[in-house]
Image (cartoon, rainbow, N blue to C red; front, side, top):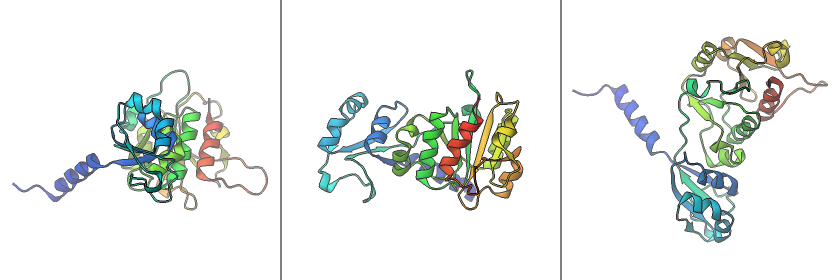
Length: 258
């Protein structure tokens, strides 16, 4: 019996995802990936200089590096990338289900960052760094409209990609509803909102909070806004009130900390 078209397409997508690999580059990103036991590592290309700087991490990983001439770097990384003589081919990390990652643990109030169509890998990498610094449980984007795991994202994250859960889910609104069912207060950042983050969480800082940020320019989609428990703004001094989305994420995490 012939399989339905949708079944065939789903199986093809699953095989493609399983075959997908990513080239990480830069000393920080490569070192942290070499030291991450959850990483499936396939190929390491380094210059002699980079090999010396990464010697401990290479030894810990058990990999045998390929030594490359810095003038003709052998790894297929973008020509304009600042690879610092180190590149590592890996499989993308699998952090599992949102509902599992979002379970609060320990005494610190749970915080999660949700991204609505934030596609710039440098922004997402910077958000991962801030999320790690402020102890967020995860950064979550959507599969079709968010930055995938790439070398540029990993380099900007400066190692945080290996430690900070980064999930890409099929439907953001459904993910938001799942978090609300788990007791999360879901706050969408909107420059025209009537209340600030601090006002929205006054008296309930111990509650799990999910902060939703939209792409620069378009902001949050209407469906995202209506799914939020409340819309909030970052309080600015003076008449100019605009932040890069990665900076806004850092400020929002700080403002919402318990």
